[in-house]
Image (cartoon, rainbow, N blue to C red; front, side):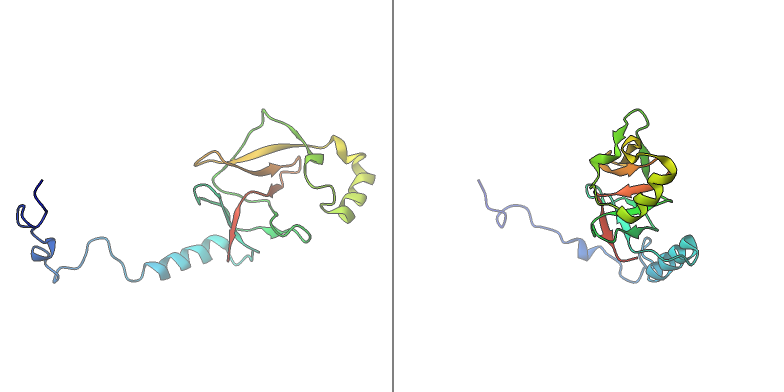
Length: 150
């Protein structure tokens, strides 16, 4: 087998590139434009994090609130790129039992036993990874997501 140095002469692509022509797909202001788009999209609201799917990094939530005790869990009302499996119903007691204990005590007086409350699993619409649940009040509880700075 001949070595690469003895084979055909390698032609560099640099010899054929005309650097005087501006690249078609390059925009030096793109980061600024993206930031303005995000500010407009969020409409001045603040968030504890921007949440992404852990498998494909698709954004699933732009505005959320971090759990006070379980710092890897988040809740949100507005989500993107999520699908809810309405055919599958889970018991809420599958979630950590101390979640929002103070809040639960007041809710139990109004709604009775919380053990009967059902939740549906939530999946990333891009790759179908399970990322959380949604409760009967349409509040999304994310526990399998990657947070990033808002």
